[in-house]
Amino acid sequence: MKIINPDTILSPSHLLTGQAIAFDTIIHAIAPLDELKSSYPDAEIIQLGKNSLVMPGLINPHVHLEFSANKTDLAYGSFLPWLNSVIQHRDELINGCDNSCMKKATDAMLESGITAFGAVSSYGLDLEAAAESAQKVVFFNELIGSQAQMADMLFSDFLTRLDASEQIQREGFYPAVAIHSPYSVHPILIKRALEIAKSRKLLLSAHFMESLAEREWLDKNEGDFKAFFNDFLKQSSALTSAEAFLELFNAHPTLMTHVVHANERELKLLSEGGHTVIHCPVSNRLLGNGAIDLDALESHHINWICGTDGLSSNYKLDLFEEMKIALFMHSETPLLPLAKQLIESATVNAAKALNLNSGEIAVGKDADMLVMQLDAAPNEQLALHLILHHYPINTIFINGKPVKGA
Image 1: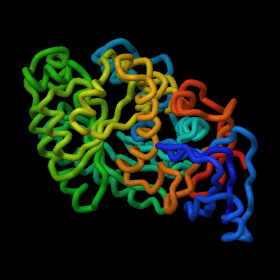
Image 2: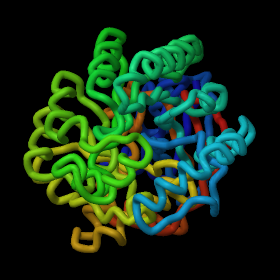
Image 3: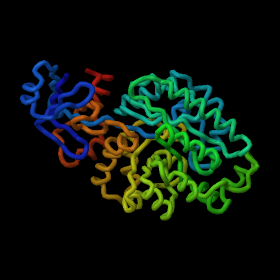
Image 4: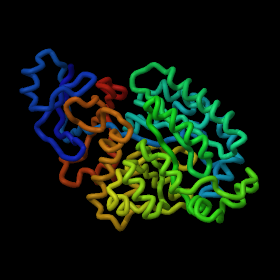
């Protein structure tokens, strides 16, 4: 048992002062230091200094580790040129990122305070790096493929990767299922994957309405995707509609990533289905997809959380940086409420979406905590200051074990 005594605790919705935290792998009590010393007389005391802060570890719900070798290979600015560049450079990027490359990415996330992440795995090449990372991991085995004649082979490969992830026996590693998108996965494959996810009680993730090209293709079989699908797959029409895609997920709440170009009907379906939206502001900007309407999500009571996406569409895997970009991207939204929403999106709300027992400094929660050093005593704008100033993280605890500092 340990007792940590900071100046301030961010819980993350409110501030506590004059309180300490008793923990081992989980948080057992939050009370004044003397009270905890009396209750746990043999506990190790960690006395923190002036202007110290303890807050929950951050949770990155969406990252692609397999493309972590990218820096300047891919074309930014609009979606189809980027996608074509991914196809052109895919082999060299995949072959150029071994376990040490992906470990560098997971370590960078840890350094920035990310104590759990959702890894979307296209090929299973990141399984070892994810399994060996210090963080909690939800490992989303991704299914992709729109050609019916390839369905059995694609599904067999998907099952092989899923089964391999289910063989990982370590605390805090959770196999899951990802459906790439409505335009890239045949409905037959989607239905089969959903049956697996439901029978094995696995979390689901999908990309949805990321680009205007996706919108036009699914609605009208037109737009930038028309030539792409004709040239690469000899496909002249979409296999499903956006609404039909969402209806497949009715009985299984899913993490839907991007959702920049969803319409009112689709937002209603997302809300009714209890789905969560993952907002990746840097990726959306770099790929020219525009900014999601957060007010529309709020009006439909849709839970949204913040993620980094992968280094194929970002320059770093840092949620504090991602939240900073979001602050400036959504300039029409009141600043301080947005800052608080962003901090909650990267902690307590992400934990709920990923079924993790973390994201809060609260009794019974896993002791996933960041120890930070502020410049001055915090005030009511702490959430904003945390995002803007990226204060030093002195110690990181995961399940009560120090993985940095201490």
